[in-house]
Image (cartoon, rainbow, N blue to C red):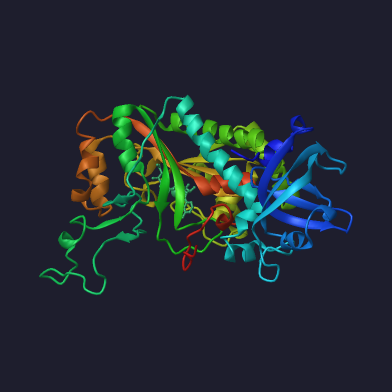
Length: 461
Ligand code: 4AD
Ligand code: MG
């Protein structure tokens, strides 16, 4: 490669060498004796300062190098005179790949709001904030694969198009190649899916879990890491219609093992970010939220508090007046209740053994007949970051739940068969990748931690 990344050029080992840098101009300032160009190429949050002697270049060329322009610069790397940077380049050659019109380039001014930047998602990666978020996102994704690979889990590619609704919430996007203006109907005037592409009703997956379970009952320890889709109309700072989920599934694990894995994995990932994304996390800490670094370190350091849903209710109920939503045994917990618990225990909380009627059909039933071996991990700042459970491995009990919940048994014959042929105890969970990135970056809105968010009425870019 002809050029060297800014990340490398900022290292003192380049002092005294000639180098080529390529990137986008963040700012240009100076006078008729000297010009300073701050060059960023995305490899690191910091810019390389280019020091230019205006007498060496045509006025026209220098004029074309404004904020947003893409350029190539060749010169000598020297120790920087200014504070805050180790090296700078004394420029000998300049080439402009692409100008950016100063009148219309939207990132001219400093201090754009995050809301405005969402409207220009095609350009926002060029800001410090989104550069930092996207680099952190990359490192976390890599760390997830490393974590599981180092522990002998296999990466399973679960399908994106499925015929099932794993969570049973009916929040699915349909997949079809019907002409929507001429949908075939059967004798009863219902949609005739036998004529559709797959010969049956299909949708974008809401979870890779069911297929993950099939693989865990053969390979032992697997994880999925892929996009999942939910057509839930929740316009909240914590929900996306398209998000990425990590779903480990482990044969012979029970609920305690599942909690141990979740806690160990989350601590590892947060620590990995602190160790490998220091510059970017520090930038976000200083820019947006001075408590971010402390919050991250705290999660690495403290044991997660484990308690049952029933125990949580006994803590929440006496404080009913503080909440907008009613809380009593049997109700699903709202974000305000989750936050209360996290504050109460001053750190992450793992809640288990929820009432069965508020959880999915596949969860292992407890002997009390009322609760299931569900497990939610609640995080400061985020609320629910992980949802999981031990799975019902008993064929008859599972089938009974399927029937009770009105799920089409014939759609799940393959899932049910694993309980007929060599069934075993097993457990797993789903980590919402964007919720993890949200936690690590301290951003407020989930739309700001995925490159191109999909939310209700929003699929631009
Ligand atoms: O709790 P959920 O719905 O659990 C499952 O899908 C299980 N099949 C997982 C398993 O046991 N293998 O979703 C898991 C996690 C949530 O805790 C949350 O972090 C994230 O996925 N999540 C979302 N993230 C962003 N936008 C949404 N709309 C999300 N819905 C769930
Ligand atoms: Mg959940």
